Length: 310
Image (cartoon, rainbow, N blue to C red):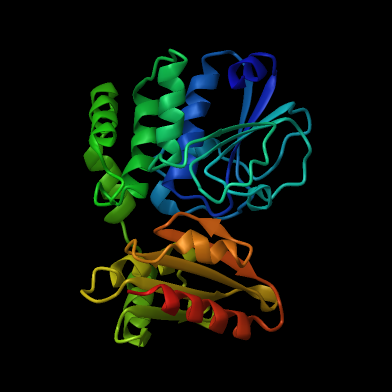
């Protein structure tokens, strides 16, 4: 049982995946609040050196570090489908909280619910099941992940349970207006600049059902934008009437690329990205390609998406 392992540990490292979103970091921050009450030593860790500033409103954001402690004896990961995405090589007992269908169960203990709309829902259920009292900081952290992964309650997975959870978290102190303000309304000048450029350069295929965005490193350097700011146009493209899938090919250093796929549900994003070493959900998934011939692989992925289009 996860709680038995947690109770027996003295220094616990809570890990958000590389380039964390509100779901991963929110789940970790909620657990951080809980573990502080147990008088245990706790470290909030992420391997990334730059964190999306939109997440700075989360409780304990200032405690986040990219230095892994040497005296830790337990790790808990949040919202990460594979061990590689944690960005560490440490071998310690690990509890794996997640909701990705592509999760490969890399933990000693795996707390995974693929029906959950977010990892914060999985953590919320864990707290409820184990009679762990939630305070305002925990509620805000969990609510932030719920807002982001439910697309502000617009995702198809939203049901009565999700709205009951939201109601409960707001009663406990989660601030809905604060989450919306920080996650969606605090755009940088760089994010607005790159949004305009990417939408102007967007390529459409298959009678406008597939949108393609190509982001060279030079564009990031020119605008000063970060990866998370680029990916926002993927969801924006899906608001167009005919588009069923939007794909971003983002150049990275040393000849590799990062692929991000968003769909309206007619195309299974996770199914496609898993075949290329990645993973995710039906609506959103991604992978990294390091091969020299990634141009051909991108063509293969585009062809697979095309076959799935209705």
